[in-house]
Image (cartoon, rainbow, N blue to C red; front, side, top):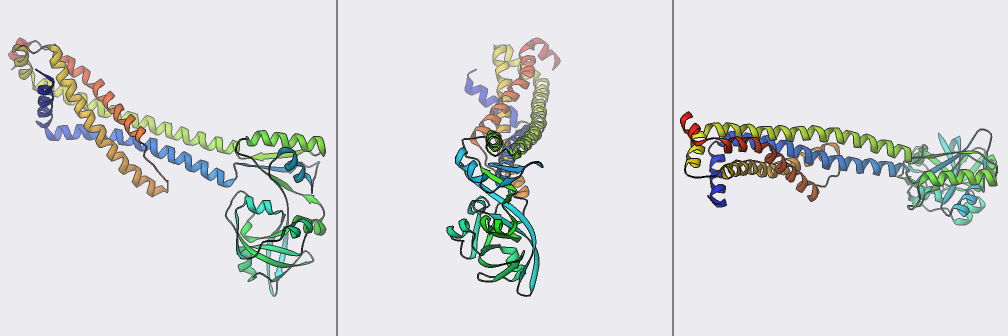
Length: 379
């Protein structure tokens, strides 16, 4: 019996019980689809967590003075020069803002233009402050979009707060969430002007970490530099620990689901073994006749392994299709940007083949071990 005859006989035997074969393939396909969905959705979830952390400022270091010390204007310039990276100083002052007859509570943010760049600020109306205004402390300010709506302010409107009269130069929309300040409801004042209003104290310095450096390393260097040059003890905060913790949680969750999916594949493999064992019992007469005609045990074993392989191949391909459907549905439901990778599809199909062949060994060995006289006598 050649390989072509084995293929033809295997396909005939599978289609001899179509419902039973369909359920066997379905069990294998569900397991394959589950593990493909877990791999793809897990990777998409991990990427989205990283993106969210990046949007919140994973490439930032926040420096604040300890109780015994105080940051001052110029510390940011020192860090920027010595560490070769962007540094921006900030100070915050809650105040009541008046524009004509309207008033509102707002946060006055003293900063430089770098702070607005870090927050991805976009100009909605008006114009940016000129470099000379940032450096010398002009009497114009920038206003968050929500605060402008509350005060019904526009470029050119006069604001009064902290005993100062300021003109609105432009209205901003900030898209970053890396700060605890509600930037859409804030008033942005040049640091030099704020120094004239409330002194030279700086409450926070933000460092923009280059891609080739680690935030923890930059934080350590900044703390050491301020201690040595200014005698100021500071606390450095980064998002590195948070991103590692979030990634660990996602990885653990994906690992748990992967084991569950692997169990589903094993259940599918057990289904293949079960149907082949039943098939061996039902086809004892056929096996006895084949052996009586000279078919070797090796050929009988190959026949049943080939049937197991066919179940695995069909189940693997169907599982990939089911997995793609699960991924599309789940991704749309929970808002994940998913991309099915070809390598994942190949791995899960290979896993199906391995499981199918592994669970087909026992039925194949039993079939090959049947003695033709005993098989025909049973019939």
